[in-house]
Image (tube, rainbow, N blue to C red):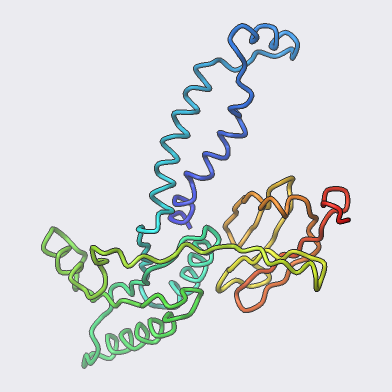
Length: 265
C-alpha cells in the first residue's frame, strides 16, 4: 500500500500546490496592498508563489519518471496465502494509477523435491500460488518470475549479483516497455444518449469501488486507494448517470447536461 501511495505522491502534491497557491492568483506587486485591504486578509507573499513554482517543477520531474514509457515496474511478493490478498490489492492500486506492471517476482522460492516434508509442502504451496498469479489479479500478460531462496538473507554484492542473474528480472537495454493504461471515452450518444468513460481496473470487485463527481474532477476509490482525476473536456459538460463493473472494466456513464451541451440546428 505504501509503495503505491509513494508512486502516486508527486502528482498528488502538485495538485495540492495548485489548489493552495494557484498561479493565476498572483497579483502585481503594486496591487497586492490594495487587494489585501479589499479581501480583509493578507495576500500570500511573492516568495511563497516562487517556492511553490520551484517545488512544482521538481515534483513534475519525478512524476515524469514515474509515468515514463521506459519505466519498468516489478511487483515482488513471496507466494503464499498472505501475499495473495496483498498482491491483488496492490495491483488494483497500480491499475488505478495507470501504472503498467512488467513482471511479478515470486520471491524466496524454495527448491522442489526436498525429502523434508515441511520443505516439500512449502515448495508445493509456493508453486501453487505462483501459478495462480500468472495472468490473474489484473496483472494481464505480465510474467511471473521465480526468484530462488538463498537460504539466508541477501548480504553483499555477490548475493545481489546472484539474484539479479535470474532470467527476465533485469529488463534489457532496449526497454521492452509496457504502455500506460489509457482511459478512453466512448461516444454512445447516437445509440444510448450517453458518453462512457472506460476505466480498466483488473481484479476490482464492486464492493471495492466508489466514485464521486466534484466539479470538473472525479474522485475514484478502489480498495484503500484514492485518486482524483480531471474529467476530459467533453465529460465536464455532462452529469454522471451511472456506472457498472464487468470483466475488470469500470464503465462510467455521462449524460449531456442540456444547459451546457451544444445545441444542434
